[in-house]
Figure 1: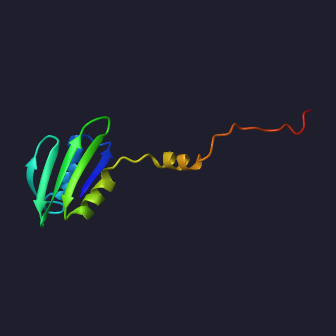
Figure 2: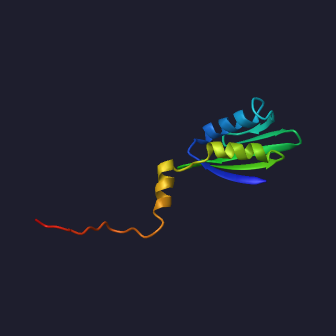
Figure 3: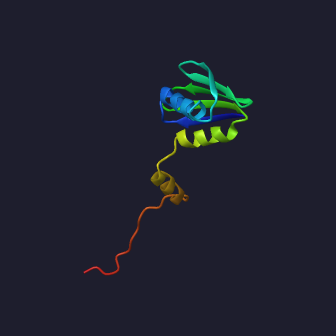
Length: 108
């Protein structure tokens, strides 16, 4: 299965997090290949390959076999999400914006 996730982490930090989550201290996979922008881990009859594309935000391409659940948990932890108030405010403005109006009831 292939996944893609955008994260505010730098490529280096994102790959370090992937190694911590999937490597010997995490899921127990063995590191078989590593470059500045990618790593490949194998074990348990499957593999996980992570490739980072730098930019304003980092895009991670993740390929996995037999480790989908662990990859999905990793994606949820590192993905970029708008702050809660932007998500809430965006959901409240579903219709066209209206100008505020009022009526003067008594003018003295």
